[in-house]
Amino acid sequence: MKDRPWLKTALSPFSRVYGWVTDLRNQLYDRGSFSSRKASQIVVSIGNITVGGTGKTPVTEYLANLLSARNPIAILSRGYGRKTKGFLLADDNSTAETIGDEPLQFYNKFKNKPVTVVVSEDRAVGAARLAEIRPEARIILLDDAFQHRAIRRDINILLSDFNRPFYKDLPFPAGRLRENRNGAKRADAVIVTKCPHEPDALIRKQITEQINKYTSENVPVFFSKTDYAEPLTYAGSPVKLKNVKIAAGIADPRPFIRYVDTHFHVLDQMLFPDHYNYKATDVEELIKYLKNGTFVLTTEKDMVKLKPLVAQSGHIDRFAYIPVTVHFGSDTDRFNAWFGLRIEALQNTAAR
Image (cartoon, rainbow, N blue to C red; front, side, top):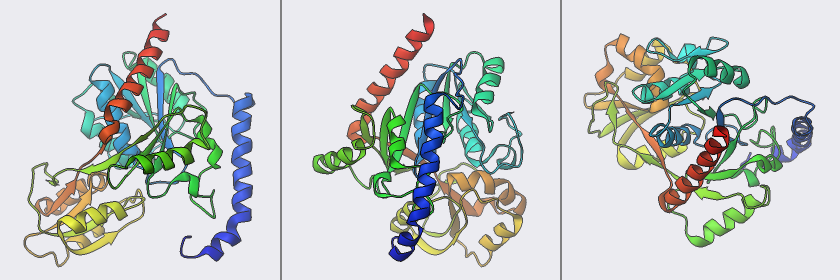
């Protein structure tokens, strides 16, 4: 839309209508006309107002690592893109087709920790089933659930991309917002993700002031950046890369491409839609004309879907991926303290 302002202007009336509809929906939840069920567990939601690409997966993993060090927990996701329905518990037989790519990534990463991964379109139903089969998991992380108001949450964390802040955007179709900016009032904290560097005091102040125009009073704002780890082969071994061919099927591949472009020699790239379901023919296309010493380099999210197909092709030694994590920089202690105190207070309340 940025390059076509005339189109944004033409679509603005439709955005206003879309915004009114989402406002009405939120008002009906606020007034109790639409029911919102309270789960027996502590519920932490991680989500956004902007469509896709704000870094929900690394933040969810960050919180899972924090919490699982002291508590058995669960990650409850919708399982976007899966070919199944209803409540499913992730296990060693799960695939991206059965539970979705992001839940599969969670399961692979946390299966040796006290973290249960489940998917359910209805999060309230999913939480109730979790209470039955994993009663010890007293904390649930809701992945991408800011607009899923059928389940109440105890902590609502809103993410905003540093490069595409929600306060500069419009609702669909003129912009990328899922609802009006005032939806940020439901947030207990806002994390600005994908900062290109540690923001200085002036930038932090300016961004915080813009965000606080739409949040409730005294809602904290934290700043984070994406950290890219050393590449791993699809077999899980560290690997030194030089020449690479990029393959990515994520909402916003630009930061990944920029990082790869500055660290390796990119010979080619193939981009796919977000949550793309890869086929054997895609693997054939990726390895076509691949020279010796050149790797197909992907994101971790793409790896969980491509790995079975790559293994079948017999070319697993030619594929690598880059794990990503979120880092809060100078905000690490402040965020961990804020989050820890909120969880502790909720646990104390639940114990009474």
